[in-house]
Image (cartoon, rainbow, N blue to C red; front, side, top):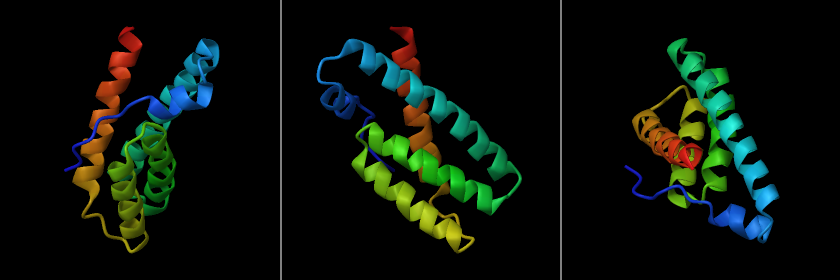
Length: 110
């Protein structure tokens, strides 16, 4: 399993101290993550590999945005597996999604 934590280092570098922009980027990322993850879970329940691939691809970029380099690679490999109708990395991908959800919850508490 991935043992890295989501972080906002990339956002801090990107916004260069602009608090408004930082908050806006985080809000957009959170909103998109939640929508994409919801759709991913729905597609998974329906075994719709085409949609699963779409949402893994989209979620992969949120993983990268949150500085999770190893997890990004797992998501990339999982996406490749899905193209072959395989899904061995699904549990690890789910673990990563849980880490991100937990992190997002701490952001919303601030």
